[in-house]
View 1: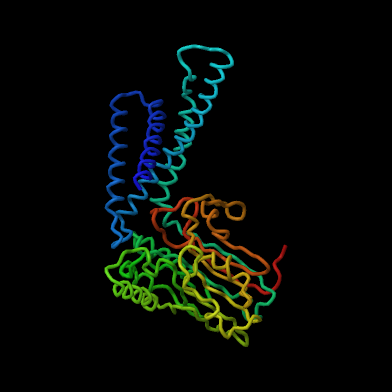
View 2: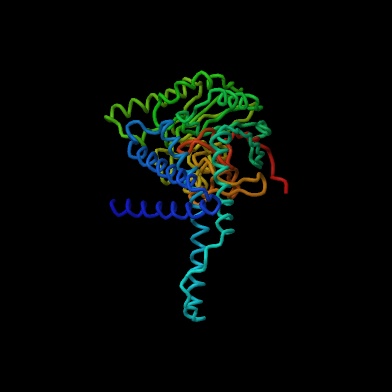
Length: 411
């Protein structure tokens, strides 16, 4: 533990050293340099103090969200600067070594002088994450987008051709701080031409009480013709807090499950129902959370008991690793799975239809949008809310509208 702390402190000091080197290339006034140093020290002290004050009985609060946002805002740009200047120092070291041993240059300065334009370039590059993170905290976290997706199935029952599913996921109500923005997002959901509304888990960060201020707003969600259904996510089990007793944890879990009733959603716990339209029907299956890394409460066998492989099925499963590990090769032939969980890490680059990148892709093979394998599909919603980092950069909060289509996908 002591060694890890010492290594962390050493890395942070190295980052601060390089950031100061770059800063002083554009600021020559002594008092401004002193202000920069004082501000850096104060921020480091505040972040350290906040980390050590974190209470696992309380969990995430607006203060912890602020601290994480401040940490990223300050240190991510400094890391960019450090990488650039460290690269320059490696080149300087190689050049100095070559000059000394090969060219026999015995001048007093072993290392070539640091080039000003490299420091200026580092500062310019650092401005990109700095400004992006500011945007993410002030605007991005509530910049809700509607993603529309047609999916074609040869075995879709005729009556369900054009059937429209609206999906939301990862509300994380404990992170919200703007009722007006949330009400606007709920209105956006209501504007969609939905036949059914599905919510794929994580209604809170940890505690049922986080949702209480937002129940009235979410109660304005319209109930489509075929209903509103939901499942649990990994955060809904209270697993990331220290509880005073198992009874307190169990009571919180019961209260979280009851939140779904309070906003008029039918919570599905390893079970299924059949949705009938005309003379046809499809099966809607809802499992508890099953994740490769975050708990495995879901039981697909139990949830799909009595459902035949030939029936058309839509599965709600919070974590997309469930699809990768089990669902896509399950003998019940699950045609469509709807997931969330990843948030796209709330940080990335996305040009719809052309390019998307996020650190999430190094943890999850399916992390945002639609994926297909052997005629089976999973759609991963980018999340409605936010968690840990109080913002979104590049990966916007999502309302998904999926239209089921009969037939083969057009080329």
